[in-house]
Image (tube, rainbow, N blue to C red; front, side, top):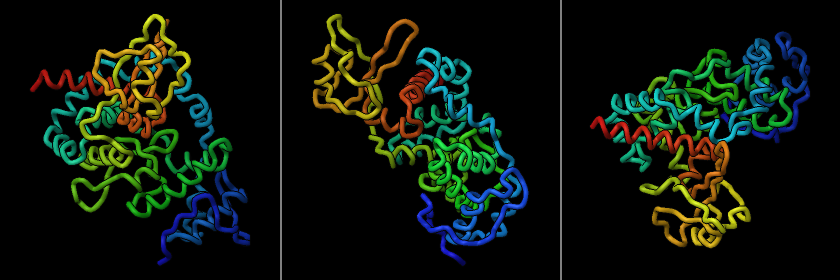
Length: 331
């Protein structure tokens, strides 16, 4: 058996063969044939297996527009918030928490990630498993790896990771469906995240992000822990800019690059107690007719590792708070 090795970035020199993809939308593509050669040389896949897979690919051209215009880039906060902060999503979140109360408490106790954050992530990503995505993961990744130059390097790595994941988890490559960017399962992990952060929380021998709520909740929490989640740490706090503030001289961002004292000197204040030396990010969110400011802490930054957007992180945080508020009324 050949050892599974990473060939990300294609550091292995191309092999000189006459291999061709005989059928499908990628028929005759030399770059695809070169990928097949390198993958076969470094993994348990044979050239014949890979040629058969790639010969069945249908190019997913509808993906390009979705990637070029993600909601996180196109919408302001007041528009984006309305997508996720809805009564139905909150009530479903409460129901999900009630149904899996003991499990979520166990995951939270072991990892330090609050139940409501785990529930909110699953709610934002797939509406608690209702919308897991309908795009064929393999065809999507092939399309984006070889026909989306702006992010070709990233999706080529994810294509490789997907093939390795499928082998490790005994997935049928062409059967899996997911998001337009290749994310899978109830928590919508991309392939590299699945391989690096998914855990077998229920200890049944495999990390199942499609049907095992234990593995799903445990893996979301593990993802946060591995990215630096602080047990009992704050996520974000609202700020008010005083009349003579110089907040415009500050650079908003995701990473806590300021000390709270820095923001105070620029005329920002909070009704919450924040230590002078506490690292914070200045989060700026656009309401319909005015900007809104927040202090983002380390845990806010960790949420943005799931999706690199302050809009996404704030939607998760606010949804979590609302779900928690309603859940506590039922207990």
